[in-house]
Image (cartoon, rainbow, N blue to C red; front, side, top):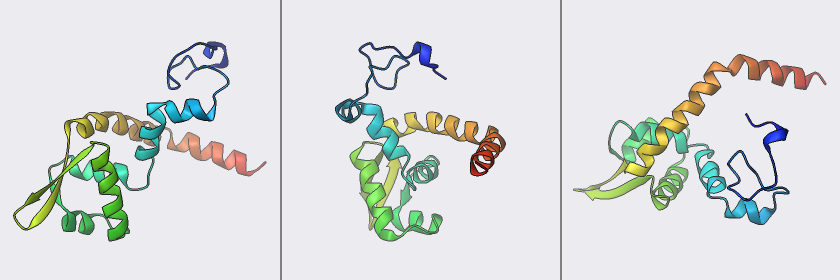
Length: 135
């Protein structure tokens, strides 16, 4: 965690401990981390990446494995992940197959670490939310 004393006005990336202040909308737009974090934060992204960790899957298989996602949203999410280079899409016989790329595989340990942190601190987060709701 970065405290206010270490946040100083200096050139650097926005996701580094040194943040140029004030942060402008243009700064946020230029920051590569902003776009990646937005993609990772989408509802279905992490789940699909985790499923693909075990190997390539066809569209219909993904559709069956992820309950609650519409086919339209599945298509949209897969296209976004493909355009970001996190997954690949290829035609295999009569079906389309999706697989993690090296880039997508390199993201997984970071995402897993955030998930593990969330599980480890779930009770603290719940307590903080309950306390905030009492104000």
